Image (cartoon, rainbow, N blue to C red; front, side, top):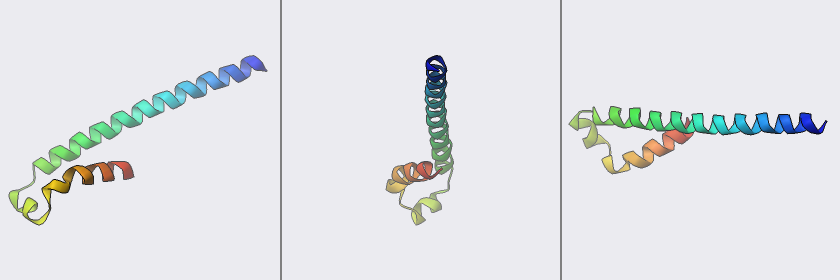
Length: 65
């Protein structure tokens, strides 16, 4: 039973570690794509939206994803 418990613990540890790394990479890539999409907007878009709030908006929306 002890070996089974250790095996389950090891598998769970690696599963959570890899899941965390995967989630961080996806979030980083999504931030880059979102930022590039914001840079491709016309100047009129920036007149209607505050560009200073872009970083906080990106972080907030990535957190929701």
